[in-house]
Image (tube, rainbow, N blue to C red; front, side):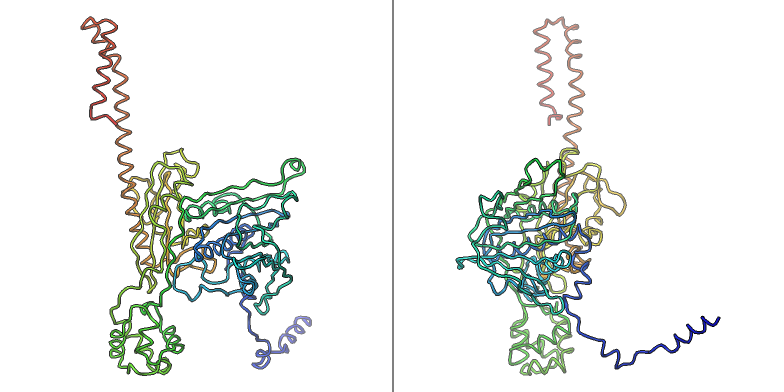
Length: 565
């Protein structure tokens, strides 16, 4: 009893916090510190996914750089196991390279990049992916991100070892030097190592060592590289993963062979154009900020020059509707009358935003990408017309491949159809159940197109469904960019694309079914031709030669009937 009372007295006399004491403990949180503790938001929530995310971010950056420079991309992805749970990832490209001053900021600073404020289609947007991969490698192994880069104008390449200072979100350069450009981080020729297949006089090579795990399957790096080759038919990508071998296996060759996915399109995709924000996609707070930061002298000029689809006459109409002077200063309007201006914009009928900011793959290229990686009997693809959600233009593309049951290792006959999800030419492997693409595929009545389908689920059969969404701003559900939000406009466009391809699939399956039925009947009749010829021989007293002529005539008659296939 005495002990219990003593503990109660201690609790009663415990020092309580005051506003002043709590204020002393508060401090600014660095963005890198936040993501260091919440790295699952960026796709580093498990060793298996960490390996995939790091490769994905490096390949995305390489593809964007090559396409912006008008270079047909050639990339090598080399993964080497260095310990029981350690892997060294190297991604090399033939892109334009990176200016020396930008290397530490790109690879050692979160939320740094050139794509965040641009309204045009691109793979990376947040400026957080590759630097987060380096931060994860630094956290789990203590090693730096090693970058080798050379531009066309440089005689030598710059090599840097970069780490991220998480307290200040600033890069720390541990070592930098000028070296001869090599396509990958291997010793010089003649030292017993094979160099990467990418051969170019310029480019970038990034190397990150991290704790990770390699597991084969549909969520592996193998699958990502294959799907990347499908959705980017203009890409040539070399892939290799070298795992540690047991003592009994050390006698053989320690180097794993390269697997090359060849390009089938010889042209670089048409570069998308940057557009200005569409007024119907701008919220009130963003409108206030844009007016405050506008360099225009009056609100009428600000509306006409800072937004798309607003002409000078339309700007005057909006000002009249909001009862605002067209000559008023934008910064003044931002504080006083922005809400009236916002309502007037929403009430004004405007053209949809321009769509040259998108770069769809195209129906022929989609089909070509599927044909080179997936063996099937039937292929079809459709590119929908651009549409809009929240003022952001987007475009949906759907492709399908159907194989005979058992004819393709990639497509199972009794399993649910294989759904490949892509956003801005990037494969999405995780979080399929939370994605708008999966919802749209499950919501289509596939029985009407000749497939079996459990209630509320994916159809069953040897079918591959590929859905690509191109947009200036893909509405991902999280920073890891693995699933697309369920905007009604996006789900509707995907559904329409699936139904268009489904109708073509239905025609193919109907023809195939009719042909199979005709073949079955024909085979059935062919079984009785010898018996019929024997009966005719007995009735008409035919010799062997005449009997053969009768059999040939019966076969000829069968060939010219409606049962012919």
